[in-house]
Image (cartoon, rainbow, N blue to C red; front, side):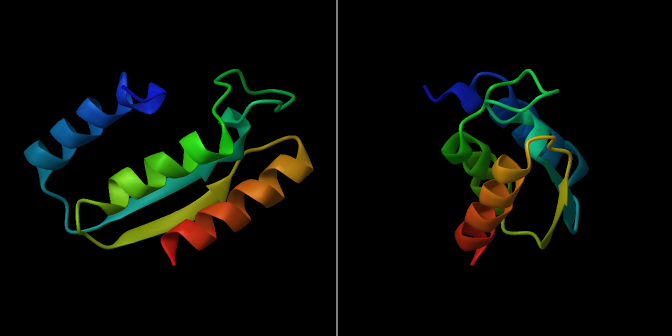
Length: 87
């Protein structure tokens, strides 16, 4: 099991099943990455992007927003990588 599946995937799936949204706004805070000065989740870049891929897999329009992140090189890498995953 992937680390992101421990809590987020079942929770997101349940939310999507119950509410059946027509679109999702996904705020991708880079402060959850390993090495962030203020964050404490310690996600890898790939693990962070897996969350984006999972939400995208529901087949509804997704508006992806950047946010958070207090180690600038992590923020730039995160958003560039997630843009490539989305395209």
